[in-house]
Length: 226
Image (cartoon, rainbow, N blue to C red; front, side, top):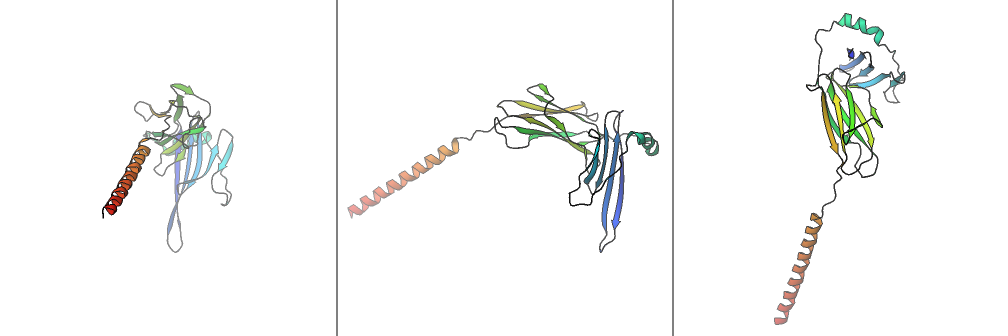
């Protein structure tokens, strides 16, 4: 069973000197293998359920009033399907990009990030390779993050130590993709400072000094002639 999601949006108008519109958002997604429950406000996440650790995670800043939400998932799935009666399934294929978290220095540990965006519905599968060999260690996957357009973002990260010539790839699998997957590659390529600018600067400085010396010589000769 694929992940089934229900989005509930509530618009609240706060009466002040000017009317301000706020949006509360709730997302519940369930399948045989994955679960997702989050609450948002004005496009920002307030809370999500971590079903692996079996705990709720409040993501509002520390200075905000403490909040908590009761979780619900599979027990409501049949009811949600019956009530909302989905007819056609929305499918939005994801896009992906891969980049390093910090500046790349050979032999210094870093993190590669595979940013997957614009997907609907969850779930999506993200896998890594190094030099065409599957990598399973030091890999992590974030929670799904809902965007204002209803699609989702997710991040996968890989800890690695750069070595010249290594090639990494991130493969994203999702049913909305025509080939069912896309792959992005990233190669360790540390730029070596070029000698060209230094050579040109040196030559220019030398020519300038020669010009000054020649000008001084002819100036002295001219004075002697007088």
